[in-house]
Length: 279
Ligand SMILES: O=C(O)CCC(=O)C(=O)O
Ligand SMILES: [Fe+2]
Image (cartoon, rainbow, N blue to C red; front, side, top):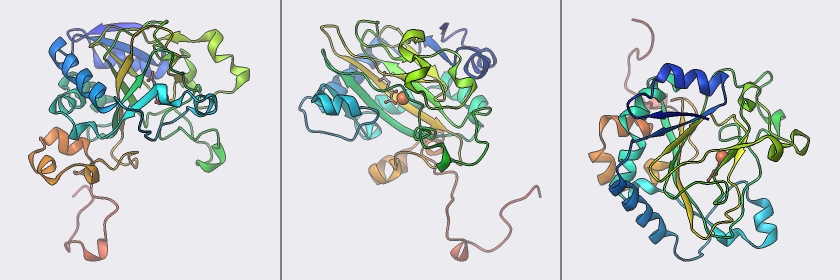
């Protein structure tokens, strides 16, 4: 996996790698140890007990009775200001504007914590491709030649092969497909290893999954989903946030929340006049 720093994270080179190379890169040096410690403390506090939250790609863990060893924390924007700074980091915004279009949005920001002994996921692709195991529910000819997703994982604990660093199949993003057992994912996968504060950035068409945590420490990351402005986001973030958050949101945060793109709208009730077109 190609590794970049805050100083040399060239958007053109990274986008080339996401679309036509391995499909994933890391960027280090975007966040201070204090920010990471704060984010981690909030995630741990909100996932202390086992109260179950919705999760994805964990069918096997549910069957094995291990689902309580992986925990999600949703609606992070409401749980700490540090998460707004993560989501709208200028280095990420710059790359993502060029990758997903300048008016791109955020579809989800959540933590994935896997406790020691906790389970991995099934190899998959991410939203909005995530149910591509039913390809007939998507348009004919649908493919991954242009991106409708970018994923950021902000690593909060050491991500090693032992602790369950995200596995991915380099190059698998070149053809949009949901992996099957015949693809021998576990034989060909590499791992998104990193230290706390590192960011893994990948194109969600790349086959990937969280892996079992065989270490003696927790393994948490902040998972952020970014989408072009016209893709229906996975989380209804404005509905989950207090009005005071929306009122105080920066221009970048308003964009990420989808507030700059008004559709669907009741056009019968909209202000009269021409609103679209070159002139
Ligand atoms: O936590 C991870 O390593 C990856 C999680 C993931 O891919 C997902 O939940 O879609
Ligand atoms: Fe995923």
